[in-house]
Image 1 (cartoon, each protein chain N blue to C red):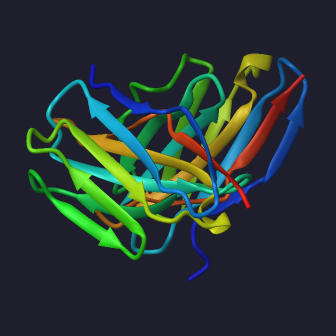
Image 2: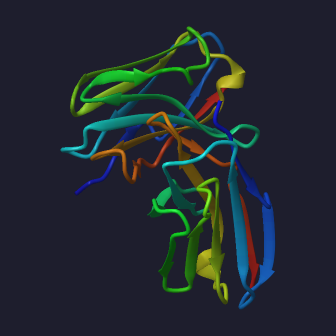
Length: 110
Length: 112
């Protein structure tokens, strides 16, 4: 079945450094979503990407969808302590359901 | 809007007992999802409903798990009998379409 792999599993940075997490699917995706989960919290929707090669920005966050629609990335510029949490990608393939990656846990040293 | 409501927030039970988790989706959302989150397996989709009808239950681990959605504003996930390996955080999420999902706060289940 469809698998979504996410790397790295953990990332620790100094405040102000950049951060990137990568998502790869075993199959072509119709769209991909990104969620953020704060420690002890629940996943919160960030964005959805649909088009091949699409790039979207939300303030310091940049999201990309690969040309082949099998990979995606989330880049955070100049991290802040409020960025702490686990970032999940979730891909939707031929079936309707979303398949979540394992997540990248981001910790930040202030 | 109150968001997705789940109860209880925490549940501690003994192995062999029946556990019922409850969810009230956001009004007007046609889709409801049940997820389980553990450190080992991450976030797993157990089952989802569209207009109260179960669409895909392929993620339900075994027959001990069952889910119902008797109406548009209520769903339950039942585990009978519960086992220690069922310990996890169970999330309910709802969606107005197959777009973003709104997650509830989760139920932390501990089976001893």
